[in-house]
Image (cartoon, rainbow, N blue to C red; front, side, top):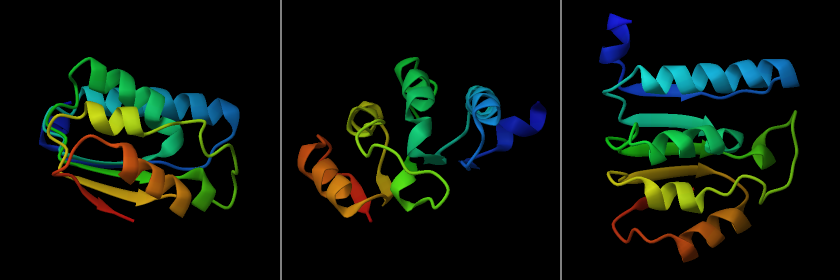
Length: 124
């Protein structure tokens, strides 16, 4: 557990079967909760519900960089592009400075039009 306090960057995404996906969400939740110095996070867009809950509880207030990988760029899983909206998540992160998107260009354009942070650097 002590090593988790030194963790500043976490990349946690992948393609799983449903049972493994549930375990993945539990693991992601645990990793974020026990990493108080986390300032950079890479997730799949399917992870946004887990991350949004942690943002709402203040667990990610220090997060400066977020990378989101969309299912539209993953070969083994294709789903609804609007199923896991990231705009509310982005607007809820108080310290976010950089957002890296690996998403469909239409989704990126929509996000750029509607997010509230004028100082946010969006890379896609």
